[in-house]
Length: 261
Image (spheres, rainbow, N blue to C red):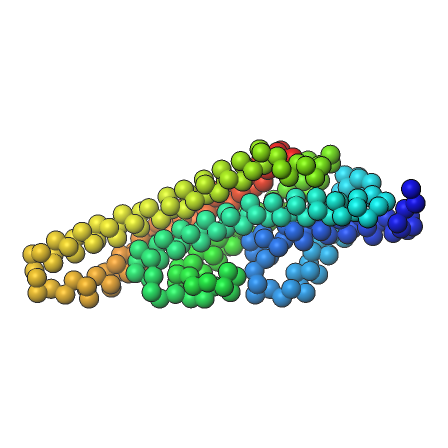
């Protein structure tokens, strides 16, 4: 069968296949996919990484199909791998967002929120704080380099990848289990604050029975906010360790994902 392109274009098509996977990955990975980063900057970053990665993964990319159908299937496979790896990173970051939302609502920030430009939704005042802390932990623990290494490893793990592999029940179960575990970890992270605020509300309830003239509603707002900030101050080292462990688990989940292909 006649090839669709001359041999001079083989390298360009190889770079394009790498670009498709990089683009799918960086569309969702935290730190690089934020909407405040201009789209042209993100595309330029993906293109630069594709040019840098191609000489390394050239032997693992495999032969480029010579038909339009083969090229479409190849693009679907590359984008699917990148999107799945990026999704694992995305839900890990969203677990930190959920924990921050829980803490914020318990402190009484449910009615006072900010507009999240990433998700176009209302969020607690503590979510930006936890988001930036998570990004700082991501870069200070060198996890961004680890993610790039995992991305390069994905080419070794998916050399014999077929389009049917995306319907593998093991891949589906892994994504579901990881999502459930991250949800449970987010609840666990917000549990100390829930317990503190619940105890405070119980004390306020007892005071309202002992002193009916006391305006408990007016008093509870500053007390719960002060108690919440004291909890954040006292538990800051544990919160940072929790984020570091969560991001490390993110890399392990990406490895488990690659093993299902």
